[in-house]
Length: 187
Ligand SMILES: [Zn+2]
Image 1 (spheres, rainbow, N blue to C red):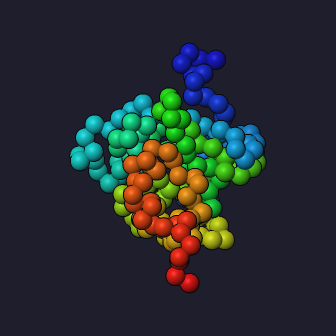
Image 2: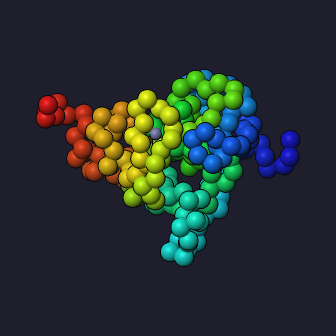
């Protein structure tokens, strides 16, 4: 095993042409729901986001880090190629001790399946776009736009247990004001 590789390499993936968009990331092995799929490399911070071109913006990740602060990083391969799906098979969780972010299998993933996540999950900024979605899911939202707070209410509710801890902490009030667990929803 190459030095320095042991921490991050949990499994192998192939990056190749995707039916969803451009290149995608495909599993070379099966995962069961609840498995760790990969560890995200957050080692390369974006130093001056204001100077990025729209083309560069596509390859950055903006998230709430374990210390509660906003962090912007250059996404590394393979995760930078993970496509959006409205019915994703992975989601991201931060290890609150180490601060390491990992993607977890949201459902069973077969060998050869494309890995996907929902670009609106744990997001509070307006996403670049809107762009049409070709994820092929039955419940496809057709357009990738917005963030967690602009998702349809039933999706916000479905994603509530999937929200990452640092995001939940930073946006506690905003999430509460969505009243997703309330029993007084207008019919
Ligand atoms: Zn879709």
